[in-house]
Image (cartoon, rainbow, N blue to C red):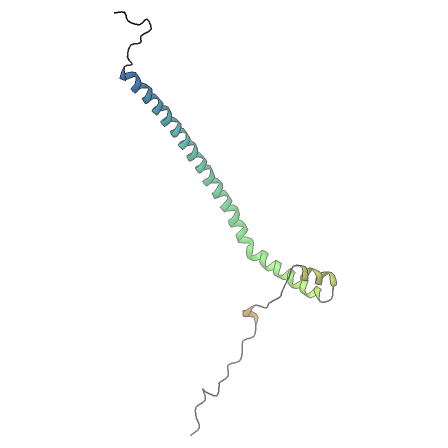
Length: 121
């Protein structure tokens, strides 16, 4: 009996396990690297968000002052709109409507209704 000239010895299970382990180790290493990269991105975003919140807090602190200035300007525009056609056109274009605040309105005088009056004896 002659053996074929190009016969290979059977693969040992150790090498198969070694190749599988190496592939899993490389995959795990890549996943770890991506996880660390994502963590640094999240940390950067948190610091950016904190800085943006600080800037917004400054803008929000100025909001009441800006609102009062805008209200004064719009009241001036309404007053000008009565006599100036350009101002009246601006009021119409932006659909500006003046509504007085409820707290500025005069309070009605307290009166007794006829039902509250006591009957005469």
